[in-house]
Length: 132
View (cartoon, rainbow, N blue to C red):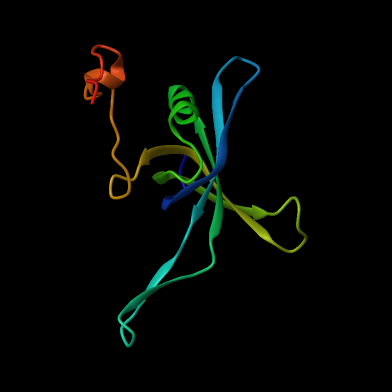
């Protein structure tokens, strides 16, 4: 679609990923990402954290199943997708940020991530752990 705003959000998953299916059976995952803005104060030489910005993220298709299986609360992620800002359905006068059709990955500056091809044999069930 033309005219849509694409954004990159870095933050951590809040709560659990909800996996649902459309009437045609297509998987859709929905979850919150809390983006925590940080600013550097040159006078004090320290970083300070601002108020968390909640973003509702939706992922479709196979990526939705992967997100539901992989992501848990407090996992740091980087997500990109179509950004929308709409009135909050719960609070009059406030707005809610949505990141739709997102592509999500684990933030490797915060976590180690394994993929099927790099999963250690012990974790993949191909070998037994050595007794200490």
